[in-house]
Length: 237
Image (cartoon, rainbow, N blue to C red):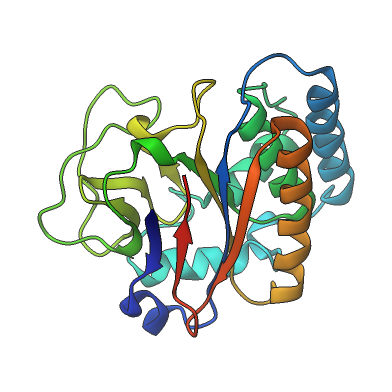
């Protein structure tokens, strides 16, 4: 059994951080789904209508992530959070392509609730999973789409296991080795929240994501919320 935990130093810097965690097993993550394509298409259309004319950097679901990135020395304008990057692409008219059911579904939830959502293949995780600040001697990793391995910058927030980082700058970009694919049978999905996103809002997003992965991926789901008072969760697979 793998454990997910958030380092105490993270909560010292971001005391209102909460993370919804879904541990999934027995996943069916294959095949083309017309229904999923429509869900993804509709979510994008709704975002374009809802955010028309809105300055994204000032949106209450985006601004806290800009502040968080600045807190660990990253220019959010150059390296926007995953939710800001997603919304920028969609509001500019880019159409998101289908990747696989799990990724499509968490993108639907991210768009609907305007919250960062991501996931990793649990069978690729070595040891426990931790959200922590990067140290001075992190291993180089290949991020998705990159041709060159690079180490996380000291002090940035990373998800990591015993082999090193698997996602940089909170949920900014994940490593290639732990990506969700059609071969994924066990996974962990996370939804990240900073105030003014409340625990109730996080619960609603978790409700939607749970129902979607159970319906379309036939997944067995274990659900947790990690906070400063409950900083870890067990991940079954």
